[in-house]
Length: 81
Image (cartoon, rainbow, N blue to C red; front, side, top):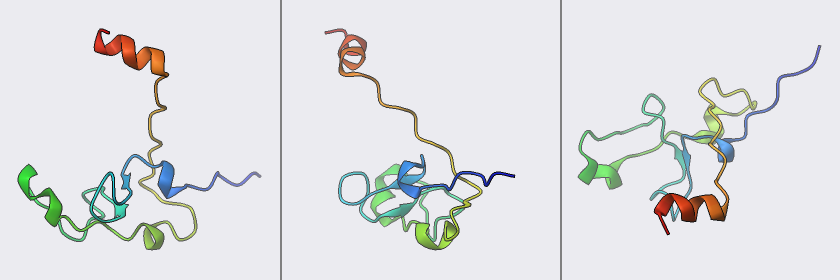
């Protein structure tokens, strides 16, 4: 009986880190957010969920891994350069 792998918040699709991706660090899954906004121009008023409390035991039920980054060549060719 092997244990399921622990979920790491920093590798989750819903996690955003300050200061580059969001104003506050946390879980931006709509069901976990403390305050959310409908309109895109109000994005700075969103309050994320506490990712440490949600994933205390490493078993977050909403964990979705981020897509791997493409290589530099693939990113350049997708731009049409």
